[in-house]
Image (tube, rainbow, N blue to C red; front, side):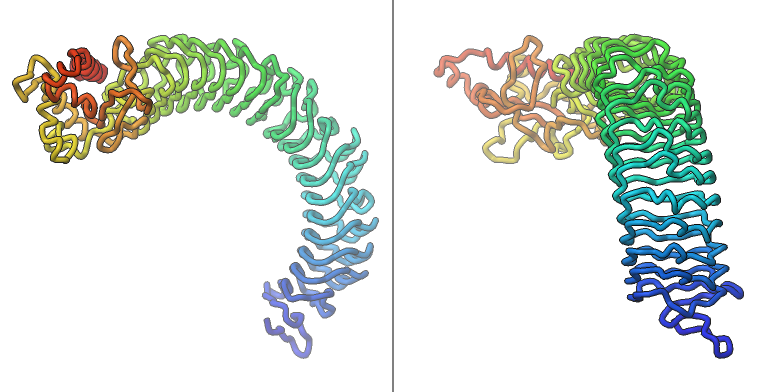
Length: 580
């Protein structure tokens, strides 16, 4: 912070920090509480930072000796006024930061002395209008931000002399309208940010921006995108227009945009027909959710051969075309539609597909070969459908599988089908038993509780099987126990609904014919059972049944509940494909 001296001449203003760059100086006077521009600035200064002070005015000729200055920062001050001649003499200035001040106007001619300016920051001020007259003489300007002001309208020819401008930020203003020729003259513009404004209509003025690559007008109040909306912007790569109440979109709005990579349309409820994307061949991400779509074009993939992500959730889609030609697809989202069937050709040859979401549809049937060629598929969500069976061919690479909510799907799936599985969600708790071996049952599968009151529980449980009523040995159960123990050696799989770490009480066993709809629900039924991840025990009030035949007779009971318990157990084991 000490001044550098050459003879008796001060080269660094008092309190400021200076760094030498050869014979030139970089001067940092930021955050010093200055109320005015220092007067003894060295003519060899190339960089001057006056930001975060209390300067309220830039007088005429404040920098007139700084002919070599290339970057000037005055952001974060209290500037309310800047003289039309304040920047006089700054012939070499390339970067000017006037952001985060209190400027409400920029006088005409303010920038006439800085014709070499390339970057201009006027954001976060109090400007109510575009400073059209002040911007008429900046032929080298490449980037400008007028964001975070109070601008309500953009007049015609507002930027007409900014022929070199590449980036223009107008976000976070109050722009409600703009002239149809307001962007005339911006022949080099590539990025236009109109986000967070109050635009009521689509900005048709963009039609003159032939070099435009990135366009943002999200968070506005635009309700419709017209036909051929971007016909003048063939180089567009990205369009951001989410958070608009868009209801209708011209079917030809997005045609012939060969460089467009991403298209996201959410909540356009009046879209009944899929947009015609002819000529938009580079599209990689397409999101069209919460619309009124009921059908997809048969030639969807012929139009979009580069598609990687297709998100069409929350529509009314009933039938799916073949995605055969979408060979680059990696993610498909079709949740919350009206799909009923999956044919063998639907996902044929999608070798790159990693994620497929078909949840919350009405799917009743899937062709046995529907997933056969999905060699890269890792995540499959079929939850909340009407499936009674699921083909496993082609699904050996799955790491995540969701099947919950398919009430007619009783079958359990062998871990051998899914060697890479990490997370699986099943309709019923018993279907998780093959994935969650009981860690606390290493010595005996039958030691359910440690309580002395239940010392004879293993014998009582086995006694439920008439063929072995006089024996504690059951070869089928021993084989079952052995296979469960072997399953512990496999990698851990998170399966839900989990039967519990040691056991959980399951009530309200519905009397379906096959006894397979065992659910972890708590209701009022007297019978209950304890389920552990390895096996099932019919206990609690069922114990009264097996405890004493004499007592059963006294209560007027027969062996119906015994047979039910036996059948339930056998069907459970069968469902695990371990006792067939």
